[in-house]
Length: 117
Image (tube, rainbow, N blue to C red):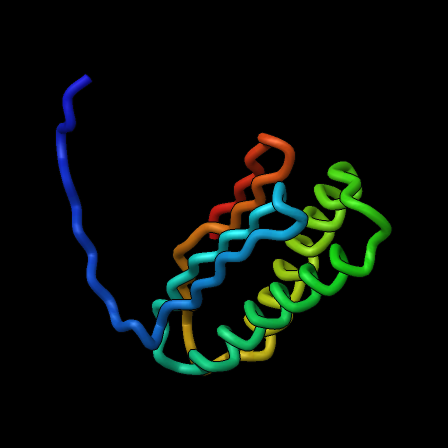
């Protein structure tokens, strides 16, 4: 296999939301999202911070380390995140589009769940 093309993209550190942590020695959450619009940047980052805080609080309050419950919680949290961004987009009319680029990953019991934004 040969690499055909390499692209490097540099952006402002202020526009990046990044989070990594390991829970229960077997569950890892990795969030890396770049908010490409300057307007309402902090509000977009707040939505991502709420997503992480809610997910972490939920799995830490669950009994034990049941991987199936953690995966279900992850899927529900992603749906909630998507809903919050959709509601945000509906309220903002003076900006044509908001671009988010990134990934939300959960590694649990040697299983990788990934959602691209």
